[in-house]
Amino acid sequence: MTAVFDPADPETWIARGRLPAHAALMADAWRTFPDLPRDVPAEDRMARSRERVETMRPVMDAIQAEQELLRQARNFAFTERRVARSEGDEREVAILRGRDLHGFDWNKSVQFANGWYAAQAGWVCRHPDAQSGSTTEIRLKAAYMTGFHDGGGDTEDLFDVARRALIAADRPTPDLQPATPDYARPLPSAWPQPSDAPRPTSWSRRLLILGAPEAGMLSRAETTDCPPHAALMPLLQERPGAEQATLIVVAATGFLSVAEATAGAPALRTEDDVQRLAADPVQPAKLSVLLGGRDFDEILVAAHDRYLEVIDAHARHLPLCRVMERTRNSLIQQRAHFRIWLERGVRSGETLGAGHIRWGKVAKGLTARLGEFTARHAGKVPGRGHRILIELSDGEPADGYITVTGDCLQPEMLITNQKHLRASMAASLRTFGGATRLCADHSTRAPLPQSTIPGYIHSGRNPGFAPIHAQKAAK
Image (tube, rainbow, N blue to C red; front, side, top):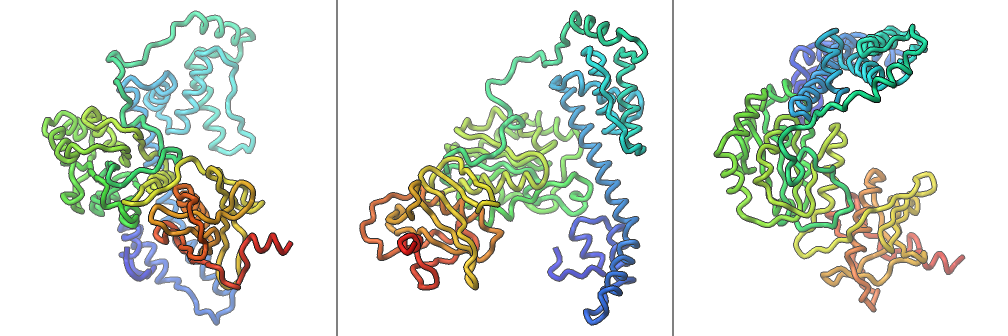
């Protein structure tokens, strides 16, 4: 992105993912209706903002329409791949039939499939109600009824449901499963999403496989033509110790190391590219060289669409590990899954507690529990930040715990940014979970590692606020 945000410059919008034509129109709107000075009355400034919004409305509508077309194209392509691999069910086949026979879009094809399947299964006709009378609801209802009639339903027949139920009971279940035997282990596309349940693992025993879009290898032109993907490399580079992990990138040329991966690489555009890499005998050898015969405890696949298909094709050459996961779903969820995976990384000489963290309600005061420890948000300290307390199951402060390096941990801490509250509480619980209570002298205490707690400030025993056990004694 550009260093300075100048909305009147088209390059500013191009750097943020807009097409050149859209960027030019948005920059022209900002040049025509710039922000008024602060000394201008608020009514005039709001009127100027409304004028600019009205000018950019056609551009925003066009962007929304393009995003909707991309969404439908991705959904249809995903369904086609599942049906081609004999992994889809009757409803997915009906979705493609609604598109091919009636020219329906994705939403109407789904309703067509629902109506067709209801008729085939002998169910009662339950079309979506057009309560508001909008054109979209009416068309969805019409698509459902089209599928219902194509599946053999007849709403005019009094005994229609009973007749179709009798036929459905005698209808054999279609076998849509592949004729080839199942794999001895699940493919990466079927791996679960990351969670905080597995135990933390040393970075040197972690394997990360990234797609070219997630690694930031695609050029700007390739990025605009391809579906959006979450950029994960900046998050990885910010994590201390992550350089010890093994990273492999999947590009149009096959498997590459991070050192070989360069910006501006071509994207995997067609299924022919996928088939070419899947049948390439050089790729297993390249993958074996990149793995280097090392032992791994965890594998994370952060790749999607055609890049994930390439990894599936060579999955038998990946090592079997205790934990095998992949990111999935929307861009926000992909980044959230990746952050969860990053939190489980352990640096050399560090020990962290394992297990699932149970979170309490924010309305009652945010709390988090891990084993015998409870992290509690004790409110805001004026002029200093937000206070976090680490307590034991009996409500006493977690005094006397030391790390593997011999540093005593402080059960009271402050963070300057409330946005980092959950991350700081989780990091402190992990640190206490990996500590031991062998410290007899509590006079010297060290804060939690600052690299794992953003915005952390060591509180110490300053007179600005008393320790929790002193508060209880005062009460």
